[in-house]
Image (cartoon, rainbow, N blue to C red):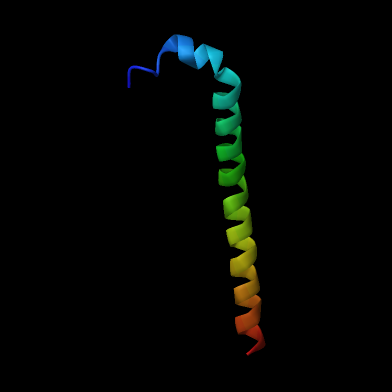
Length: 48
């Protein structure tokens, strides 16, 4: 990985931060969406 240097990181810092932000957003919304799905499944089982 000779291309991954501090100079390269400084030139592409916006992309690195953007990628990290997208990852954090995905990790933030995944448990929320999973909880909503589990709640809907639980309500569906209670109706039976």
